[in-house]
Amino acid sequence: MQLTKHHGLGNDFLICLTHEEPDEVSALARRLCDRRTGIGADGLIVGLPGSDGADLSMLLHNADGSFAEMSGNGIRCLAQALAMNNQTGAASFEIDTGGGRRHVEIDGDGPEAQITVNMGSVGPGPGVHDEIVNDLGHSMSATADLGNPHLVVVVDDCFTVDMSDLGSRYEALYPDGINIEVISVTDGASDKLDMVVWERGVGVSSACGTGAVAAAVRAHQWDLVQDEVRVQMPGGLVQVFVGKEPMLTGPAQYVGAIEVSA
Image 1 (cartoon, rainbow, N blue to C red):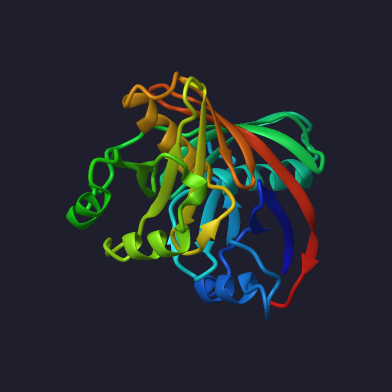
Image 2 (cartoon, rainbow, N blue to C red):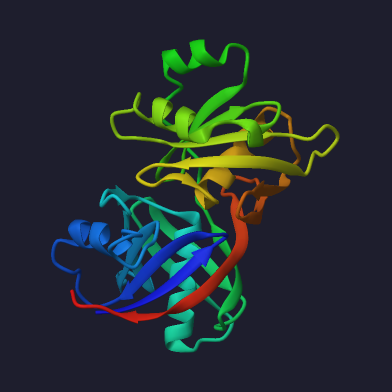
């Protein structure tokens, strides 16, 4: 099996471009993504032939083997893998995901790329659990759905939050799990958010593309930021344009190619 490894702001993925879904892909993801006994990654993405006008279909499993509908960082990495494989140069792709079809534009087929993704409409999500409301007190919080579920929480300084503790406690309240973004806004900086992430099926993560969009959309609704927002995460910076269908722009970095036994 031929794989490539890529990352978006440290959120790393193994990519397999193939014509058929591998057997027992959930178990395969757990094995390959293990950072001690496997290659190591936050997720395994299988790129399958698209249909009905799509260039590709994206099948994503987290490091724990669980299925994920969508990843903003993952889809950028998949687009880079496709561009490099096909030597497309700058290109646009239509990629089907578990959260719907996404339009993706990439600025080249090299090992470093800037990629913009139309993230589709943002739904309300599953709602903030009563225990979280009680725990947070007067802090602003809301959920969102971008094909995958998110909880966004506002605090004074997100970088002081123990995400290992908060993330594990809050996610356990949702039967299907949830991604958690804790954000803060610097006074007077209406175009920038700071954010830390708990990623469903992964844990504390350096970055989350769908989470950045969820955070920007909710912060915009709360009048904390404008419609063009830079989101700073431990892994780096992405740009979000908030609209009916938000746009996410960020980097993808090629790491290397690997051949493994299936």
